Amino acid sequence: MAQEHKLEIFRGLVKFKSNTQKIWGVLIFLTIVTVIEVVLGIFKPESLMGYVLGMKALNWIFIILTIVKAYYITWDFMHMRDEAKGLRRAVVWTTIFLILYLVFILLQEGGYVFRVYDQGYITRDF
Image (cartoon, rainbow, N blue to C red):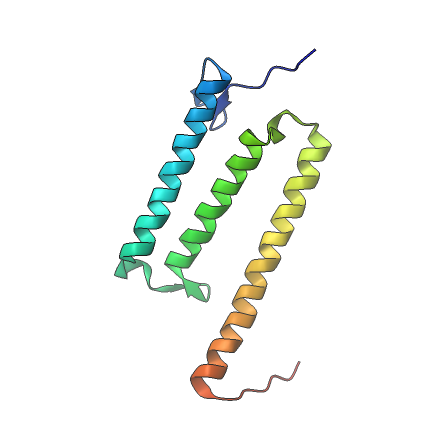
């Protein structure tokens, strides 16, 4: 017996009548997010070039929008929403940990490499 998939997105704010409509709805949402990323990447607004937590605000926006897209692809297209709570938590917690670790490495090493190119050789005493 096949399990019925939930036919809503955005925590139930948008509901669909069939799986096909839901797929199109999620696809349209992901397309809109991608278009926003592309437009921001092309025009690079000067107001988003300021630094926030060691990185340009525009880069933070790209990271956040990419995480949103990854979430909806996993949650809806890969049917993570319909899995057992333990599996969902294992996948989500592992992903959050890896994303935070990647951002830490990006900020730590990226800043060091920038300073090396900007100021010459820098030693670091840990």
